[in-house]
Length: 256
Image (cartoon, rainbow, N blue to C red):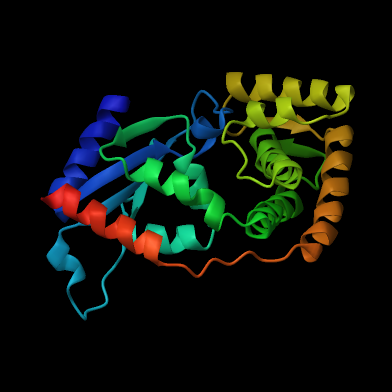
């Protein structure tokens, strides 16, 4: 499948006349709890030729391919990427920390990571993951039987909140890195491990009886972070010079 993805990235470059700077896995495979039939969620950062940016026309700054059962692939223009980085966008920060990298053609990602401490916002991060946890919990975990994968779509964002509260940094991508770092009830960990084994060995639609100890844990943490996030200040860094310089140097180096 990796060869298929690499070929698709080459096709995108030719069709859209761009250079793909960085491409990663962003979904359950990147989080480390994919099922046997999980699709591939490929995300990439690209850059146009210099003349593309020298225009007063408003232009589309994303590339999205039609989704099929196996592959979901889309990407963001570098300028859009840097604007979102300035806002400490957690989705982008996950891409930058993905353990599965398909393409990395410049030093751009390392340069962005060097700036992360200046732009990272704990409030933005926790707010994002809390909203994700709340909406998935409300929609999928209220019944007596739930899809196994939906538990992880709430557990991971809650653990991401816990990591950010503890360290004040972007949480790691892999679910087990998060869980192993946190101090959790042993019975809770046992139940999560059981679900993780089911998730990895089954398929995307497998269901499981409601696990009360996990639901109780999630409800408690959702309530806690709803109060906690209100006390945080939103960190804002309005310095665009470093990001402008990164954009310009990348544009020059790629197309020189």
